[in-house]
Image 1 (cartoon, rainbow, N blue to C red):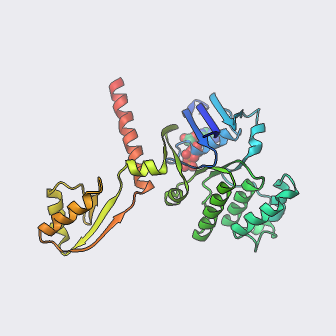
Image 2 (image 1 turned 180 degrees about the vertical axis):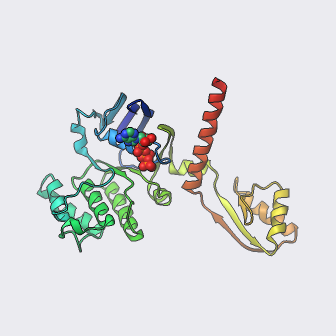
Image 3 (image 1 turned 135 degrees about the horizontal axis):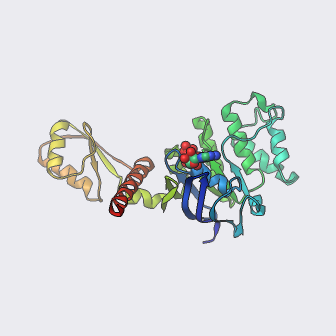
Length: 310
Ligand SMILES: Nc1ncnc2c1ncn2[C@@H]1O[C@H](COP(=O)(O)OP(=O)(O)OP(=O)(O)O)[C@@H](O)[C@H]1O
């Protein structure tokens, strides 16, 4: 596997505020990578620093093996990005913007494809001063993709998009990946990221706390949950608790499945207690709860380490 982006020991401060602490990660070519973490964790700062927009104190950033700094950005010709609000001129049309950004005429077919995939045909030839937030956001995404970038960096790309547009964007990202592009995407819409990203970088307080795959994160958190409805939920809860099944919060009957044997054992326990099972379903893992668990565990570890150091 070869990496399109390699960040090693990146440290970044604003004045005396240390914001990124020894950030290191690699992104494999052709992957869709999610960058997730709480507000203020450092996601946008990582992206802007990678794009040569911020100076940094130490570390290295390489795109396809070439070093990037604020003074050296040849490698960024391979990168497309939408970070914060797209820079849009109100008196030009969306189409004008795309043509201005395009490196050559050969991009026209690609531009047309992006416009129709994002459902922008009806307004692309209108001046952008009349665009809504979501229309501007879609234009910003289209601009990031115009020149067949090898690496695409999108900071909160779903901002302002309606559900249909979010689906259009998902399909577009997947089709661009099939053509060889790599994506680094930050988003707080975790359900969407769960559908898209194969790899995850989890950041908290300026530190990468976990580099993992979506599959491994969901599996490691063992977050399969069995949901039940019975003819006597209160007694069912008591019986299951007594049998030492791990339950989630009242009043529903939700049992955390630790392995494949949990479901038959739960059903057997209820049947033996003469409780009728009216409905049973299994919930797959979920990025939101897995992420919250990783952040919680990381903070506990940090606290313990600080207490030990005192
Ligand atoms: N230009 C700046 N000057 C000073 N501090 C900044 C600047 N930009 C960001 N910061 C600080 O850096 C930290 C990381 O901010 P950043 O915007 O990277 O977080 P984020 O993870 O993108 O957050 P969010 O999810 O809210 O967008 C925060 O403490 C923020 O206050």
